[in-house]
Amino acid sequence: MGDEMDEQKLKVLVVEDERMFSDLLTVLLKSHDGIEVVGSASTVRQAVMRCHELLPDVVVLDLNLPDGDGLEVFSQLVAAKPSALAIILSGQAASFACPANLRNNLYAAVDKSQAFDQLKQVIERLLAERMPQFESEESRISRLTRREREIFGLVGQGLTNEQIASRLDRSPQTIATHRKTISVKLRCSGVALMAMAARHHLQHLSDATA
Image (cartoon, rainbow, N blue to C red; front, side, top):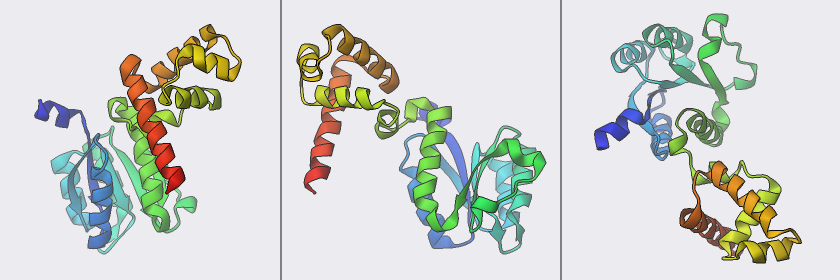
């Protein structure tokens, strides 16, 4: 069972020459259930070898490496695995111009000075698109509309459809319809939905009093 789950995860290679920064990136990536960090490299030569050996799904890639240009790694990654994606780390991410032959494989360019915040968002988006079974609760909840969030919050307080309808001056049928939509977006229903809503409500209270 464990091996099957690992096969379902996104295999990620970290290419970064600053050891401490590479280790921190690895910790961040491993905090996501849908990610398996299969290796790391600190030079173009190492990275190219690992791309061909490990065939990662995604490479988190620093462009400035001690023995050359990270774009060479990107090119070799695509040659080794045409479906692979690159997340570029650069001090000038906003102005990064991706070569035309690699554009379809560029998932995102992340500013190195804000790497951790931006990379977290990028990885969550990637997991939501490619591996929805591993998408975090936070990410799923963020897709709810303002009204759906309001109803979700009231569910978390233990209110029934009738009580929520009375609170929001809506019919119970309207609330039931909203709850069905919420269940689809959050991929859970019944007791599981109530448990998620309660956790979210308690976290909200904890954050408010912190």
